Length: 273
Image (tube, rainbow, N blue to C red; front, side, top):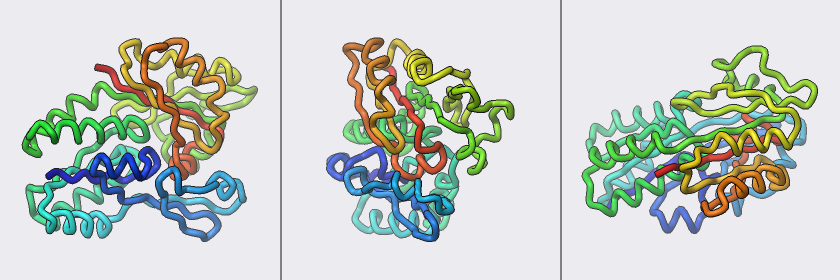
């Protein structure tokens, strides 16, 4: 039996994680000295209120010891393990998981870099479970998952560049990108890194620009809000107009990503056939 490990509880409910056989090693965030583990969406609480409190905010990815203890436990239970991490270009999670595997000196645990996050990472976790049902070996499964990864994408827009600048994750972006005069940066993930796409003026143009970035061949779409669901009041109708027959989910982005993107951010993730 394959056990799947991932590093974010934000995109799966506890019931979904149980059904998929997914073990979550939660990332953590600290606000004004109060350290919190990112829990499943139904248990996270009103984290946006905490983030608005004005305290110093930091996040921390899963450490080597957390991966090591989880892998050891699953191996003792007789599982092979696939660990699907957040993009290695935006988080230390992938490197920490690889270090844990190196200490174990086993070929029964493999680490897969999603080169994404949020909904796109969820698509890969779900595909990994489906591939496991085909009886593939762990290396074969990873190879198939690498092929699938190219069919997944993420685009997003932030209200301010300051959270990204503070976290150091906007390094590849144009230094001139700003949010003056109600201009909203439209960003995307390319090979696991954040890249600038265009500017949009106001929320209506922002929603239209994000919806237009989703490929016409998308067969599944997840929209994320960071802090408040009403942030999707423009994006959700725009996406449904373009994709009237495509399954569209709406999910929170979770506190850790909200720290880095800002409370007034929205995102779209998709997969194509």
